[in-house]
Every structure is written in C-alpha cells, then in structure tokens.
Length: 74
Image (cartoon, rainbow, N blue to C red; front, side, top):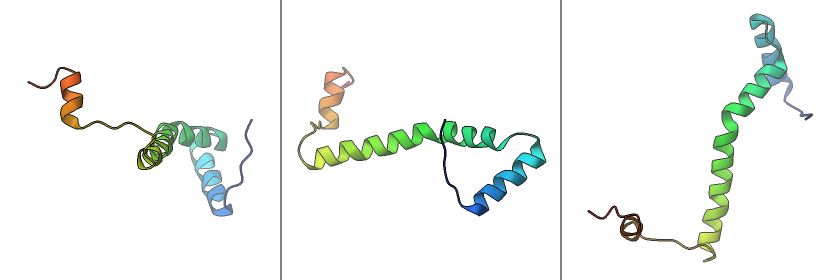
C-alpha cells in the first residue's frame, strides 16, 4: 500500500480519465508506474555509477579493450 500526494490538477485529470474510460484511478497510477519504473531505475542507477566513475571508484574500459575481451575485434 502506498499513499501519495499529487497536485489537484493531476487528480482532476485522473478523475476525468477514470470516469470517461470506466477504469479506476488506481489502475492508471499503477500503469504509469509500471510503464516508467524501468526507465527511472536505469536513470538513477546510471547516475550513481557515473559519480563513482568521476571519483575514480569505478573501473572503465576503452571500447577496443571491451571488443577484444568479448572476441569482437575482427
């Protein structure tokens, strides 16, 4: 169970959409989360890795080295 506060205008839009389509506001909120959660995870986790790279705490490799290790250096 999650409780969230949203701007009144967003709540009104959800109300209108739910009424016009016969679905619940919860259904639309769940759909929005499921649609964007992967992207949000990718963005925020990538930002954390970037910060570690900038601090010198994360190993990086040149593309040529990666291709060689993967046997793609034809």
